[in-house]
Length: 215
Ligand code: SAM
Image (cartoon, rainbow, N blue to C red; front, top):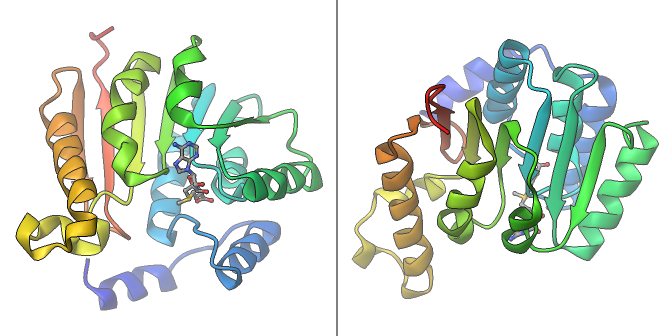
């Protein structure tokens, strides 16, 4: 989306509860990644419409998006979020406590690649916002955990536009991630059990719906 359109659309945003606005500013001041406003709006839309009972998030950071989801999902919705960075785990736990969300949000600490293999109870909504190079490796476990009729939102899939470039235009260091993300996007667009659209908002967001007839 071009920047003028993004700015105009953002100007119409009705905002969030006060503590989320504060936490978002704090994260930005400290260079901690949080989902962009457009992706926040998209998540809010899907949670309001879909009313999930169980949410899985991969990539907690300091807990902003988990808290955001807790505000827009049904009150009895359970949110499980995974983070591997020690400092961010501490900050997220403290934020969940501070805002009275420890019953609704559970943080699993460690590498998502291992942790999701141990999860068995399925989810209605999965938000993937972790290391981009790992999306492809996480995909098969994620698909097993997503209920038919469930939604998978994947953030940062256009990599600041780099994904459009030929691999030769990408610095050697970033070529592996570039290749893996292209393979991931191909998989989610061609997977028989998913219906996926890729949206040019923020850094690119993929929205996938798991077909109701699939297992
Ligand atoms: N969802 C957060 C938000 O909007 O508030 C932002 C998440 S940030 C973009 C990505 C986070 O994923 C980082 O804090 C990083 O440490 C974590 N991460 C990356 N790869 C991971 C993995 N394999 N397992 C667990 N956490 C991971």
